[in-house]
Amino acid sequence: MSKRLGSFFMICLLLVGLAPDTDADIRVVGSASNLELMRNLVIAFGTHTGIPVDLSGPGSIEGIHQLVKRRADLAYISFELTDAHTASGLIGVPYFRDGVAVVVNPSNRKSDLTRA
Image (cartoon, rainbow, N blue to C red; front, side):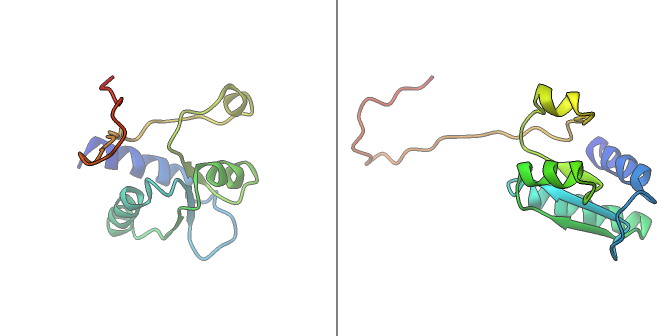
């Protein structure tokens, strides 16, 4: 089992019993850009544990908002928590790193682009 999947399982297992009153035992909300990865982790988690997880990806800010309002058990976000977030008691645990690339079409008329 990958380290990433193992960490996700551990976090979810700690949340069992703390979920809001929904059909799922765990409610996970967060980043639309990470939704496909989280979907795969949730499928694997459900397969191994039989614990239902409700997953949605309305965005990182909404994930934090729902977590703070106790409408979610876990928020997955695509940025580091701010000092204000951590001061309010939120704890961030990185679960993967993503690469970003900027691709420019060779026929782009902008000529002063540089590699930095």
